[in-house]
Amino acid sequence: MGWGGNTPMTAGRVESPLDELTGNLPCDFLVMNDRGFDPSSVLVPTAGGYSSDLSAEVASILLEQGSDVSLLHAVDDESKREAGEAFLGEWADERGLDDANRIVDTSDDVEDSIARHAADRSMVMMGATREGLLSRLVRGSLAFEVLNDVDCTVLLAERPQQRSLVERIFGR
Image: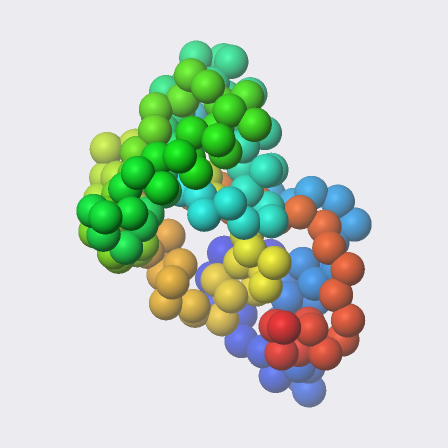
């Protein structure tokens, strides 16, 4: 189906084919933009979203196989670092990622934070939000545009969820 530029409303459709497929997933769903598959150094940005558990499961397997896994959580500023560290520590511990590196970025720019930390990694692995990261990626969401700009392989993870037609059309 490809990574990029499907546009909705072709042939009278409200959703692109990828939107329709990911709108009511029957199973876990991984999409990879392969830029030279190398799982040796993996960045896992998380805000604790719905599908971040799937990213954590894959990261845990890679960690067991010897990959260097770094977890990234971005916060607004230095005053929120302690809360960010507590969140990331709890998130990692609950998902069996005790041995992963933990990074709390205080730059207040999630996209820039991901881009900077991805610069020296071979892969970025990111979970979708309940609104559906994959759908927003196809539509060109600014929040995840950085994933098209990084030089490493990107793996997006989304968990199944039931959404009504209204939720699928309006993303609510």
